[in-house]
Image (cartoon, rainbow, N blue to C red; front, side, top):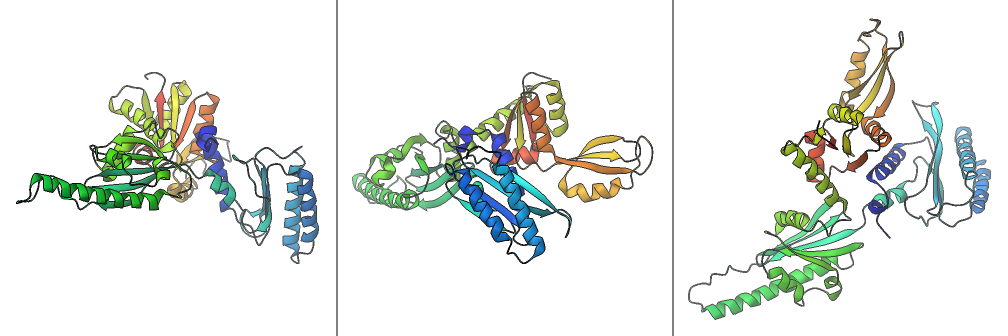
Length: 420
């Protein structure tokens, strides 16, 4: 099956991640939040019968408030189920419960219906103080993994690349002396001894490869790299388990082993990792940085500049960090109706609202300004782009380039159709 990245856009995955993060943060009072997972292929009539039984069982709950909230949630879940003629191909997930809005007595019934991005095979019903979102979160985790082995006569580095996460598993040194022989040794004897040591090191490296990669779930392929011909000798020799050798999908030249060598692998073998989001993001942000460094006029960044180019219809690709936290607040005057949108960082929210209470309205000059609406900047920019038919890419900040986008460019950037 193709990965989620192949079948869904970065915006679709971002929205699902955001919803699940929101759901995971919600907390009810007692065991009042209902989570229902309907697996693919299960008749909805069976699910409805089970829910009616649960509704009847809930009548035995001693607490009046808990009993009322659980039964109300079950009623809403059954109402939502009636909207479906049959179970969707990927199954169905419904969350419902009374969520406190502002302290005791402020509970509001909230319902969420999700069509999973992948087929679910679990059948689950439960009540708790939190929604059971773990199976859905697990679907969004990048599962395809590439193993990387960098090797030369000085040592070897073993690493994995899963999604955007590059992880060094092991670094080993060979202990083999350089190519210059010690005094008193013949060249032939020195080479023979060195070859024996290299052969022993290859065997040791092969054992490490077997222990680290054999049996690793979702290992999609193995990349072997390193300077010089050593890596080919290692691959072609009988050092790794035959099952691992079958996983070798590329042998690439790198200038180094270690972390510098890993960067070489990412640069030189990006076509191999085309399904891995890390390389896609790297390529996209480097394209943006290239326009910035060469001052081509085909890139811009920062909320204000990007918004202006979106409104002009000049944006080809909108690039946003998934960790962009900026909030958009609609400030309105309760006296004259004056309103304006302002952008505020979460850390500045308390200070902003405190100062707002003392500010005068620029229209009627009264201290009657208040925050009427809140939203995330990232959602606003996505909606603007979608209305204009602009491609949107949401990138992680777990890569060097993604971190640079967030910290150096404010998490908002764009590649333009034409110079401005």
